[in-house]
Image 1 (cartoon, one colour):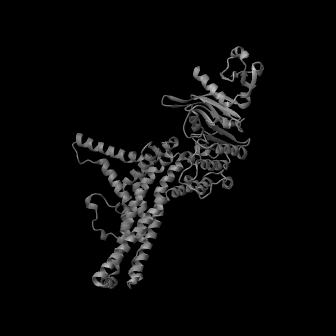
Image 2 (spheres, chains in turn orange, blue):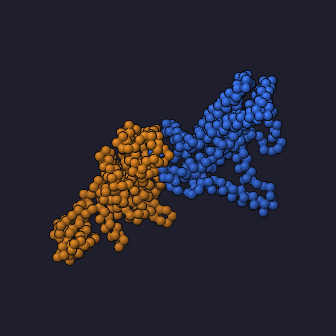
Image 3 (cartoon, one colour):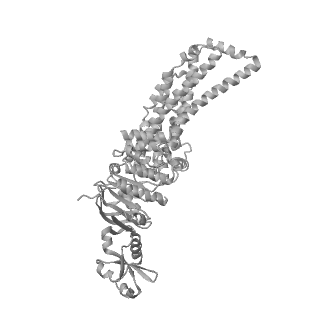
Amino acid sequence: MSYVLTAQNVYKKYGSFQALKDVNININKGKIVGLIGPNGAGKTTLLKSVLGLDSCEGELKVLGIDPYKRRADLMKEICFIADVAVLPKWIKVSQLLTFTENTHPNFSIEQAKQFLSKTKIKLSHKIKELSKGMTAQLHLAIVMSIDAKLLVLDEPTLGLDILFRKRFYDNLLNDYFDNERTIIITTHQVEEIEHILTDVLFIREGEIVLNANMDELNESYFEVMVNQENYEQAMTYNPLTMRKVFGKYIMLFHSTSRDVIETLGEVQRPSVSDLFVALMQEGESA
Amino acid sequence: MKTFVALLQREYWEHRGAFLKTPLIIGAVTIVVLLLGYLTTERFDQVMSNGQAIELGGQALQGIDSEKISTVIDVFMLTTESIYHLVLFIIVFFFLLGSLYDDRKDGSILFWKSLPISDTQTVLSKLITATVVVPVVFTACVILSHLAFFIVLSLLLLINGVNPFVILWSNIDFISNWGAFAIGCFVQAMWAMPVYGWLLFASSFSKRRPFLLAVFVPMMVGFVWYWYNAIFEFNVFKIGVFKTVGILLAKATTPFTSGLGFDFENIDFDASNQTKLELIKSMLNGLTSANIYYGLVFAAIMVAIAIYVRRFRNAT
């Protein structure tokens, strides 16, 4: 089994600040992985290392390549959108496509033009004339026209309105993703992407605190609506979080089996964002 | 190779205004100055002597020795060319200063780095733009501007009944004068190389203001060196760093005189003795100086550091 990404004991220090601690992950192809963590948790540091933008200690391989040593080679096979609006302001759309075509062996300019024909973006536009949303569309069009094995998206929709965000992920899923490809996404708007994720990675203070696929999550984390009469009993199972709504308690449990939990009340699948909040709080109180 | 050509093209796209429009504007200015001069002269002539002076002048022109006319044209061409050399250096100075900094400032470096282009290629493309692309564009613009100037001048001569082909065109030595500019650009690049390398380093390394790093750090070093010698060695004439940088800048801005020594015995004050070919010979002769090679070594080290820093510095 060859992994798209393997990290063994990866760590990174800035002076005395430990940005990454002992990160161990393997990512298979065909996955859509959400890398989720609070601000300053090390998401960007980890992605920078993966993309060869910064060095790190330990063994990190992306498609079998050491990213920092051979970034230029790696970029033939992977692409990334780091933040919106990083396209150079002065360039024309047509120049940008020509430049990408001349420098990227796996880029199809016809395909990019086809994607763009469905938008309001014209080839004669300069980037500075485009709105933020259109710039993101253009960037996505370029990235989707690159035949890459791994796509890394770091807050790709920050500051865009809901219509653009929705279209962005729809395009990504329908026109781009297939089982040969792998996508890693970070975003603060977890709710919007959780239905497309196959795996989640939670990161806190430079450490990976949860590494699971969605099915595993659904089999081990349960959200239960507990009535007043079952409250005492439910508390004995140590809920991760609890909140009170309309006289009922909504509790989040971590359990290996559904059977016991079901006796407490109506069981639901917890959202990734609730789970995230629960796990982050757990870390703070511990 | 295809990638590298694309990188050079990219620089041209981004800086077309500075690289192409500036030299063309200088050309336009020379023509405007010519027309203003002519119109003023003509106006005065009309008022004061009913246009006789220009008529007599035209006749007198036809009597002048063609060798002398040729010299005047040479002086015109070489003088304007040295203005272009100076402007070229200034443009390249600011281009290089921003070349590895501006994309970090606006974040577009993250797009450039998402393409399969190594940092070595990127940095070298900036250096080649400075030393090859800009000089080639400038040479083309010098040729265009000179031709346009001579055509306008020809029209003025025709109006006044003087045959421009006899007086003007047959006396222009295009090859040597334009050749002097092209070779001047090469010589200029060689002398300026340590400055260019330093600018790339400053642009790549600086987190806030590349200009301050590029200009004030050498000045501080110069001051420290000077006062150290003045106070501890009692030698107020030892200006080491300033002298080196000053000579370098002088040669990098005016390559036509770069072949001349800087001790007084070697300076040839009588410029009229220097023909165009001697000028070219003198410039190339200057390149045999060992200082050139020290400069190239310094430039190579600076460029290497710029590449090294470029690999991990992605923001400002």
